[in-house]
Length: 321
Image (cartoon, rainbow, N blue to C red; front, side, top):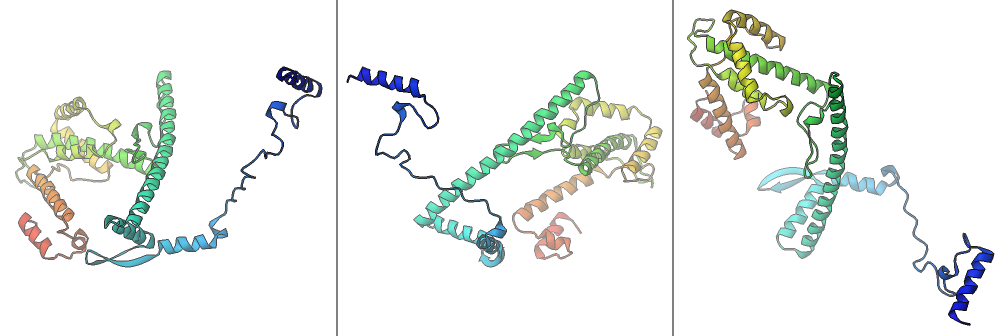
């Protein structure tokens, strides 16, 4: 019989008897004597078990987190068993151990992949949040309605593929209250700067001729305020002109109330520290930070009132008696 005849017979059988479940087309049926599943029956997935149902894994995790004593750089340190094992593997790899180098390479690759996956998932979540809340803010503005309040504010969320989402503003009610106090303090310091420049003597009669510290503090405080709420150069100038145009008598009243409102009451007529004093504070702080970073100063011991030779020498050089 010809190939054409075989094809016609196959079509006739499909028309007469149909195809479907249990009756696949002839062209797709398994050949006689050949298995349709040569790889065999797929292995059933292992059930999800809790740590309580896997006591050996629980014991391993407990041992991995156990603190042990080690010597590093001639000094005793305490770290977890998992950290100690990781350090040993890395040290061996750096020394040229081929097996450790392969293991380290694999561990780093897996860790990088897991980290990237986690950062991507977190970024996607917060990017969705930013888009949704920004749309709500724009919708309220378009309708001429008050802007809804969100914590965190969408403009205070910064996503990064390496570090994940970062929040540069308040994320809860407590932090929101702290932000509101910071904004009030910034305004109070700008107002204080205006009074400082209008004054020549302190309340106790001492001469005052070095203003500017209040404005320096206000500008430093600005760095801790979310970018969306920072003042532009024009806004800084506008505020300065605003308070400079107010009489000294009125400024005294406004400042007395403002300092009390933010929980930092000052006597009437209070003036800022001399600018040179504040500058020296920052210079001393910068010098101390460098000494701490170099390992020359123990700030924890100094905070406890314990001053070794290095600390005493630093204080003498900086005039901190």
